[in-house]
Image 1 (cartoon, helix red, strand yellow):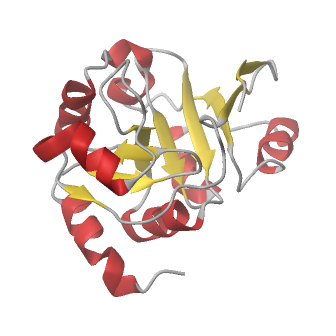
Image 2 (cartoon, rainbow, N blue to C red):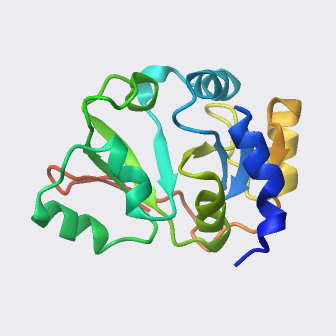
Image 3 (cartoon, rainbow, N blue to C red):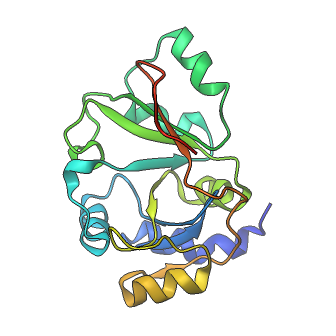
Length: 185
C-alpha cells in the first residue's frame, strides 16, 4: 500500500474539483470526483467527449459505488462481485439520483472495483473516481505518466506517478442485465 502522505496531493486536487491522471490496469486514466458536475464537465471538455457517451466510475470497494446504483438482485450482485476486485467493468442499473453527467442519460452506469493497487489506493484515499483514458477522444491512450502529461499538458492538474497493470487492452465491459461482453479485455 502506498504511503498515505503520497496520496495527499491527489486527494487535495480531487477535493478542489481538479483533474488527475493516474495508472489503471492497462492505461493511465483521467479522473475526477464523479459527484462534482463542474469537474466532470471540465473532464469531458479536455477529453473532447460528449456527455451522451457516459463515463466509468472506478472504486476501491463496492460500498463506494452503491449510492450510484439501483438495488441489485442477489444473483446479479453475486455475478458482479465474483469478478471484483478485478479488471471487469459492468454496466449496472442506476439509482434515480445518479447524475446525468455520469450516465449520459442511459439507465445504466459503467462501474468497476479495481484490483490494480495504485488505482485502488487512490480510490480509497479520494473516494470513487471517474475513469476514462488519459488522452483526447480518438487519440492513443497513455501508458506512462510522461505520456499522460504530454497528451494532456496543463489541462490535467496532477499526474499521479505509478505503473499501469499488465493488461494489453482496456478492461472488459459487460452488460449486467444480459451478461453480454460489450468490449473484450
